[in-house]
Length: 157
Ligand code: PNS
Image (cartoon, rainbow, N blue to C red; front, side):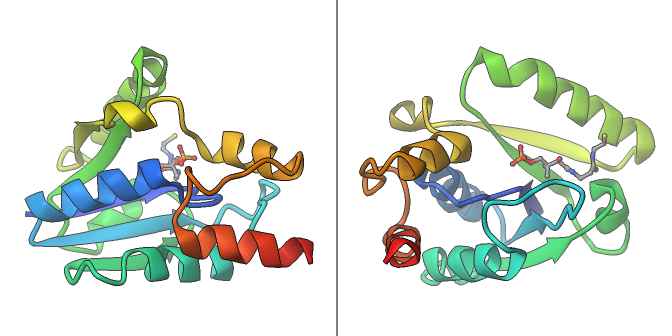
C-alpha cells in the first residue's frame, strides 16, 4: 500500500512523528506531503518545514517528504497512491476530518482516507500549541523532535 500523510506541519510535532512512524509500518511507501499554502501566514518557511521533516524521519527508509499546492485529490491523481492517512486526536478532530474525507472522495472516488488514532500521550498536542509555548518562551522539548527544538531555539539567539 502506498500512503500519503498531508498536513501543514508548522512545525512537525512528536504527534505527527508518531503517526508517520506507525503509518510507515503499514505502507510500503509513505509520502509526507507539506501544503505550501501561500495565502496563509506560515510560522516557518516551506523549505524549513521540509528540511525538519526530512531530518526527523531520516531513519524511516520508506518515507519521502514532498510539498504540494492546490487540492490533495489533484496531487493523488498523478501518483500511484492508495490512501490518504490522517491522525485523529480526539472527537473534536472528527467533524472536520469526516468532512474532508467525504469531500475528497466526492471529488475523486479513489481517494480513500485511513485514520490512525493518536497515541494517548499526544492527544493534546498541536503545532499551534507548540507555536504558542515557543512564543512565550516555554520549553517545547517534550513536544517536538530535537531538530525542531534546536532550529527554533537558534532562531531566538
Ligand atoms: O495539518 P493541517 O493544517 O490540519 O492539514 C490540512 C491539510 C493540508 C491536510 C488540508 O488543508 C488539505 O488537504 N489542503 C489541501 C487543499 C484540499 O485538498 N482541501 C480539501 C478540500 S476542501
